Length: 313
Length: 262
Figure 1 (cartoon, each protein chain N blue to C red):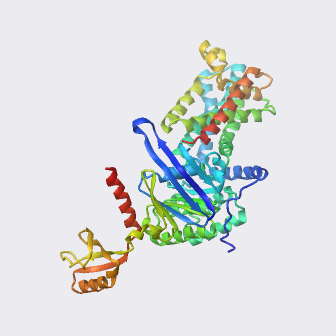
Figure 2: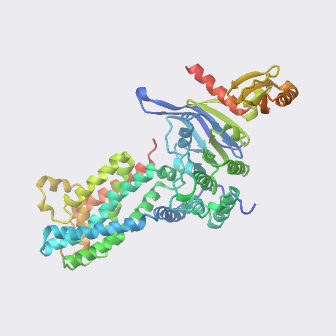
């Protein structure tokens, strides 16, 4: 694999003395060409700090960052020529239209006018931004602004593309289009580092994941590797009928029970029996609907982060 | 895939980068101008008003000045216009772009840091230009003085504009937004009233004269004054040195502020 981004032993602390906050406490991370690597973590887990060090807005206290063979800490200018970044905050583009903003940024990034035009049209079309393309930016919604910011990053992508929460504020229909474009970036050869909270949706496009908490990588691997421990169990979600209590299937464990919804796990080898159980309960009017699915990455993620919090407490 | 072709970020040769720098500067200027398109007419108008109002306002203060005082007032107004753009408008615009998040985003672009300064400076000089020219015309008419602008007035005006903008830029990048805004307000008063721009420096107390001998403001006034009325004024060699040293130091400072990594 052609390793585009290589982060080793990255440390970054803000402030001094008792008020010091260790945002990155020894991060190792690799993103290869053609790969989408998801970086998951809470607010304040150190994700944006990591991103800002890659493009030279922050200087690491210790550790190394190599971008396509270049020392990004020593030569941030070179690093910026190799990377394109969609920041977490939206880029203010008042005074411009989405199309104009994407084209201008494409040319600032060194693209040639005809190619930039063609690529801009392709992205506007692929993200269904056509109806908004010529609307002044002050009149577009947050979701459209977010997609415009993505297109500004993807118009002339770097060897490394960093996307910090690209799906925030985006409607569900366009979110699917966006995920397809993120995957396309990697399929065309870019290394994509995707920072997100949206674990459930990211699961479908990432090749590799790293879970970040308190500045360290808690777990890393492919979605299948991370969920391997739970291969033997399925997650059963049930919509309840108000006032009725279902008879839970054999071998299930109720994890969470709300007023209208409950989450349980069942052993994988009891899948067929569980489906039969659900059909019977529905007929008896004790449940409304149900969904049976393999243990999700989100469950694994929540478990991982909660376990460390308990340990820390 | 013809329309969707990805152009991977090219690792460019040094010579190619120089050509790119030119086009990148142009594109950055276009970006900044388009972004402030709505406010632009107002900004230009304010500059014109400031410049013409300085002429008219000083006229009210002094009544009917003699020839020399008239020359000071007529040549002082354009200097005030240039300095306020750099020291007052620049910090305000940089602070605004810092608080709205533009500056951090711009800093992730593969653009050499110096080009941001060049692009912004060009935009601000363009904003100041109409006020500058109209201020000169208004001054010549109001005080009935003959101005004979020399060829080097243009580079001198650019030097003044560059120095003022770079100081403003560094100030806005290094100070907290609130302090930078306050500083720029205070500077308007200092420039308008307590700097020997529209009056000779010997009217000031000794300590103030000594202070201005080391600040760039008086030399700025001297070069514009001598550039507009070369028969009546000359620029002391020392003033050129002070101004050029300030220019170099402030450009280096602004560049360092842009390159700074937390």
